[in-house]
Length: 190
Ligand SMILES: Cc1cn([C@H]2C[C@H](O)[C@@H](COP(=O)(O)OP(=O)(O)O[C@H]3O[C@@H](C)C(=O)[C@@H](O)[C@H]3O)O2)c(=O)[nH]c1=O
Image (cartoon, rainbow, N blue to C red):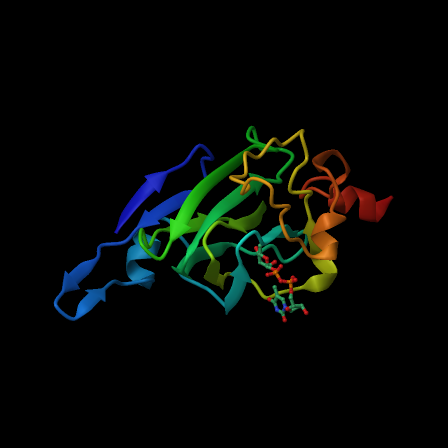
């Protein structure tokens, strides 16, 4: 496995070693020792799997309390996967990174706690699988608006096709109105 840096310091691409032979292929999709040696977490508590059709855009989600680190990959199809730094005290606050993840490149993206995450399906459909370091906590979930010009994510939207969004994502807040990891405790106290 090779770990590749991205434009966001804490977000990493994991490029697995693929062993191909007459039968097909083999890869380690997660190895606790290898991950910990690379400074990635060894503790995950929940695995998720979603299927989406072409043009679906999920996100950008984050949990303001009980934040989740996510190790994400695509086992069928191809998506454009995005992470946004939601830590106001970070020098990279509001910056984003986007990576193509597919069943062919078998890449994984490590999205740490404190980052919003989302993806857009470019293939006919896509199976998306991920491990989380914390449990789903809907009461703490927030959605950052996918097309907030202040963030400026360059989604590879298929021409003439509006992305398909859940209502909560279509009505998500722009960055300037979002809870961040620094100001949320202050807002609670106010
Ligand atoms: C995320 C999640 C959802 N659900 C339920 C709630 C709801 O009824 C149904 C669909 O939930 P959502 O619409 O939130 O699913 P989805 O939009 O796929 O949410 C996911 O989006 C991507 C981008 C992420 O980063 C994930 O962490 C997660 O937030 O599944 C769970 O039971 N457990 C979970 O962990």
